[in-house]
Image 1 (cartoon, rainbow, N blue to C red):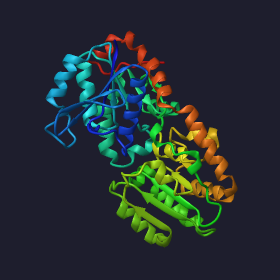
Image 2: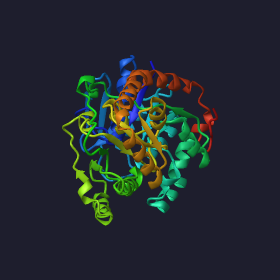
Image 3: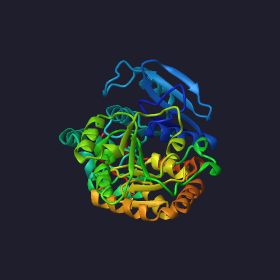
Image 4: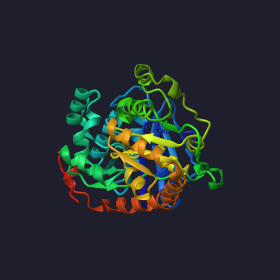
Length: 394
C-alpha cells in the first residue's frame, strides 16, 4: 500500500498544533488523509527522539537532531529511516520555503530515487525576495531553484501562484490544494454577534512580521481612515522582530490611542478571539493562503485580505469581504467601504462562514490530494539521475 510522508522540521510531537500556520496545515491534511484510510506519517526533528500515534489517525516520528540552528545536516536517525522505510512508490511532501533542512531532504530523496513534492506554503512572489534580498537570491540559485526543478511536483495553495514559479523559470508540475478548517474550532451560530453601534474594531491575528503581513500598510491606512471616523485596531500574535518598529510607527502617526498590541493567546481558539472584533485584516505583501482569515470566516467576521493570498478568491466568491492590493490606498478604500455598509456585516459574515463549511473540509481536500499524489508512477528517470534540471510539464 502506498504510504504518505510529510516532513516538517519543527512539527510538535506531543499535541496537535494550535498556533503556527504551517504545522496547522500539515496537521489538517494529514488528518484528512488518515480519515479516508491512508497511511500517513509526519517526520520531524527535535532535541529528543519520539513516536506517537495521533488521535487523528496519523503517526508522528521525531528524530533527535544535534543542531537546533538552521543547517543542511539531517538527523542521522532520520537519514537511516528514509533509506530503510520509504520506497519509490511512496509520497514524500517537504514543507517549507528557503529552509536548509528541506533542501537537504530533497537531496537525500533524490539520491534514493524517491520522488518528492515541495510544499513551500508561500508563493515565490517578488516581494518575498525584498527582505534579506541578496541572501535569498544566492540561496535561490544554489539550493531552492535546483530543488524545485528536481521535484516531482510543487504543491501550491492557489493555482495563481504557479505564475510566480514560471516567472522564475520553474516549470515543474504543480498541485493546487487549499487549506481547510479545524472542525473543533467552529463556534455555534447562536454565539455569533455583529455590533451595529459603537466604534468598529479591526483585528489582525498572526506573527508581527511587518513586511510579510503588510502591518505597516495597515497602520498607515488606519491613520487615514481615522480622519473620517473612529476605529480601533488590535494586533495580536508572537514577536517576529517587528513589534517595536510597529509601535514606533504608531507613535509617529499619532494614533497610539487607537491601536492595541497583544501578546499571543495560545489558550483560546482563534475563532473565539476573533468573535470579539468586527473586521479581520490581513493585507499581506505575500501570503500562501491565510489560515487566520479562514478562521475569521468561521467566526462570521468581515474580511479585508490581500489579493495574493490563496483564500482571496473564496472571500470574493462568498461575498465575505473585500480583496485588496497590498497598498495603503487600496486598504484604506476597502476599510471605508466596509465601514459604510455596517448593516450588511451579519449577512456577509454568515455567507463567508457557510461557504467555508461547504467547501473547505480537510477530508474533501485530502481526496483531491490523493488523486494528485497518485500520478507519481510515471517518474522520469532523469529526475533522479543527478542533473537537477528536469522539468515536468502539465
